[in-house]
Length: 514
Image: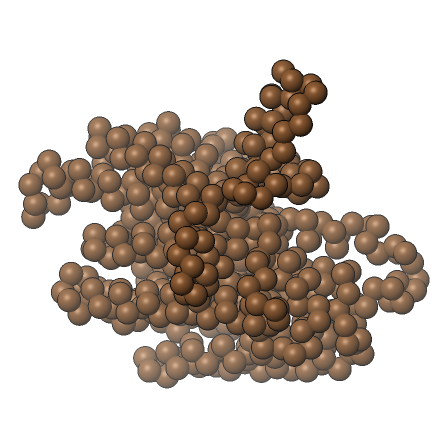
């Protein structure tokens, strides 16, 4: 490393902005504090964490920093923020000392899974007897904060990010890019978070409204808020041990609707709010996104209706109609939950046969739309990969032909296509390597897992999907893995949330050289 790297990398500027971010995030601890006071629970874990955030934030802010955030500084700022925030965010788990997350490695795993909206968990038992309502609400809130992007929120409220805000959003945002909806990037960030907050409030009202209507008896106000906070960020954490299976079919259909919304590019909703509905209906990625989920849901509906993992038929309606509705609902729910990387479960798909589980694993690689809260590879990238493959076959037959790759009416330049192909290759390479490493570490500690279980653990964390199959299935957890394996999966969640390249750039030796 060059001895004077600080002269050309403004690392102090990056650290100072990380401090500012922590200072503002300390305000969010008010929600679990209110919950703790309402239920007569301990507020110390949240007050201490808030104090640490403020103290550390102020200390980092005292570092000298330049007014502008350059290209290199943005990479460092984004990567450090998404590492430091979960490190501090695990403090409530440690201070409360409740359950398996009282262990530092488990607390970090749960915190990183929360903020990256992964949804993988190490909680051995999820219940109000084992964990306080306030701790579980903090767990839910971490996903909501991470969903639309911590730094998109910071760009919206920090005037010092008005210059470098576009660069920050570009490095943090899930997908290829976030459209600049307004002339000022701060206004764009505010618009996106406004849409995100409105849909979250709508989810609370719908969930609780179904409870008041009498069709969702256990969806009380606490559960309505808790699940809304993890539906829109495609997170999947639930204070219920059986996830959304614990609720009525009416709630499950409502959750499906909001998961579809959460996996859609939020910029499209901004255009709809401006009266430009065709921006949504004509969008090729949105149409592909719906088509993919319809096809996969249809496949699973047939499998479930034919008896593969079919849950118990409701007794209050005709058996055939009940079996059909149940099969379609379970198939659609699990498809949407996996494709959007939400990770909720309406049934234990460990009961499905291996062919259905393999199809589910395939769906974990799809991802939602760019500009949404979803993780994994994303639909638009697969669309461009398919177009690139088609062009390669065509030009092999017709070498003299010039065939541009089009996305609707726009032509995708070769640099964009190349970057997409590189990303997909890096993603799959890291996934494959991680599958092997997780499997070998499991053998080392005598943990008996199959190849498909190690594969699912790898894609579940790297793709920010949440649950896998087998030992990491929707009703199980990641607690049986070794400490080093959990820390490695923390790394996978971190780089997966930042689209891999942002972190790899900072970890590259060339980044630190002149």
